[in-house]
Length: 178
Image (cartoon, rainbow, N blue to C red; front, side):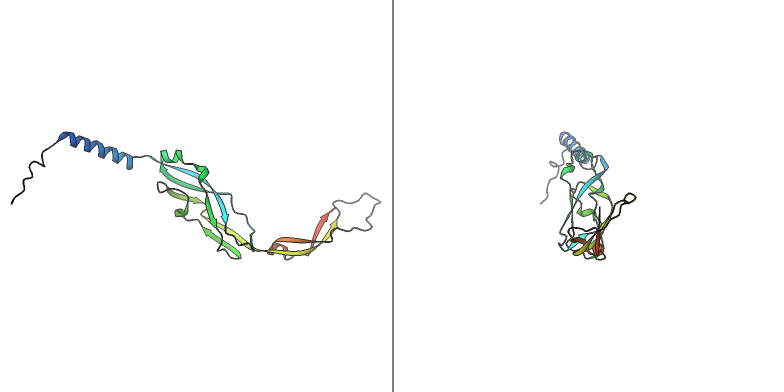
């Protein structure tokens, strides 16, 4: 038994023209779109820092990301909805360096992340501590000639300092300028 292919191989120029037009349009839509690059400021949100810790160095308010993508999508991007959330739940006391991976940036798959500035964030994490300190009054400027201070007293006599342990651990007194 033989099968006859001749009726199926008959040339139809209208269908061929539509096929060429469709393939050209599809190629232009997928490959031929013009891609542009731009720097985008992405706000940085910090979360998850354990309550016993404090950051001695403050993080930046935003990071800059260089992206490449279709020009139309780049123009219509709502930059107000962009935000990078940095989870600090795993930090330990001391210096911490956290890399910012491109795949975690808040952009759709239509965009390629080319560069992140800064590429890493460095923090000094300290323990939040309290300490009592004596208040010592001091004069702001010298008294006029002929005057002298007989006695100075601060009220309250003691204050409680809260802050990074590395800063307040050496503080036994606080100067109050009068």
